[in-house]
Length: 376
Ligand code: OSB
Ligand code: MG
Image (cartoon, rainbow, N blue to C red; front, side):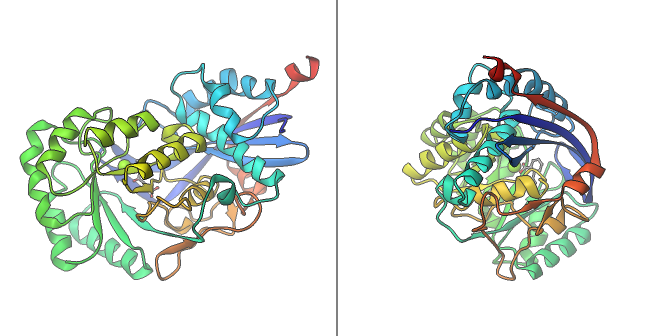
């Protein structure tokens, strides 16, 4: 059994090494909520992937902070836990707020792995010792700038290139990239930038042999994606639309997608991420691990998750140096010339959190202690 003594919430501010542009906006500086759980002399960290603005999902750093502090942490601190798997039931009265829940649940899984003196990947059910890696390349100021970025990432060994796209940064871009690199694994991610009037345009992309088209339509849609998928040879992959296992089953069974992106924050934590993974595996649908511009803490958790067997496609998990001048963990995440990241066989997530560096980036913090349980 685990008893949590205290949880520290912190917000750090950290600039990205390179600005990242999607169809919903540009991110240059990140505000990130970190969670640190303390139990019996051990500490474990979780990272909340909510953005600065409610543009990818309804959550933000500020909503996650409030919900964690006022709702989730009191529930967590009230009870003894079996482990990370205890969290969904504790949090179930709170609707939504998946990213806030995941940050806490994932820290508890990390703690459980430490307590059991085993690698987090193994505790989650991971079977891979290395994971295949791809990169997500933001919308660039110009086509030559994009071509240069792709050349660099291929040179570094990445196994798949994903291009962020939006109306006006799509067909012409795919055409130019395919002309120069006819055979690379290439995909695109629209983050919901297209509508039914664009179906003809999207159908033209079949000629580019993309591995998938990610979330072309509304962030909360299955039906119109299913209409679109019928018209395409290319697989649709859903990201934003998949909030849990039931969504994955609905999307797969109504043929809204043929591939599923799993982001542990989006589905509310490792328990649900594993459930989505298993549901897709049972139906023969491959999954891959998405990214949310994480620091090393979230990145290490993504790597552990992506070691599960049905993560058969390269994920958006790439080297720390693509995001940060200096990461907040050691060793930083690096990618081999074959485009793979090694899954740590150390205890817990296998990385050391750089507390001094985090301290220097911290702009606010708050501690919630287990008073209620001690009195009871
Ligand atoms: O849709 O996958 C997405 C970043 C922020 C918000 C949404 C997305 C992304 C990425 C980045 O594609 C992937 C990464 O972390 O490299
Ligand atoms: Mg996406």
